[in-house]
Image (tube, rainbow, N blue to C red; front, top):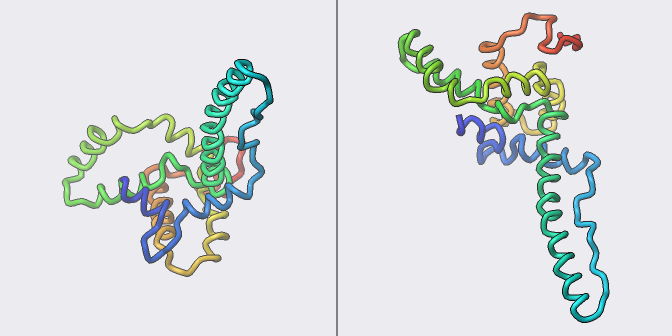
Length: 184
């Protein structure tokens, strides 16, 4: 699974680019929360000044960490909310498909998935985030994909993952995992 995840997110060397870079630039273009420390140094005298410097450092360090977290949130926001790529499941269905194609008896395939794979996955969270974020039609990705050289393996792998998703969690045409959505 980790290979499928990396392939989709970062692409192959010949691709130069994967979803990770695209979502980075989209995340940078989305209006951000303030992403730098708001604490400023103040002047003072003697011991008071030393104490104020320590207080400022204590205020700035957590904000610096939060600043990095804000950039990561924007990046994830671009992948999920804008591109419709559910980061929690990226590559999961492609990897499941590869496992299913292995030369095992059907009963053995089901047992392996039930005993070795599903108990280690956050299934409820996966289903919830698929319902909330996944763009089943791939509308936005198709628009972006045309800007890159044909045959980018990250897009091919993502399409394979999306097709495999339909195999494992099929939604009849005209229905949606969201009751208020009129998806085709």
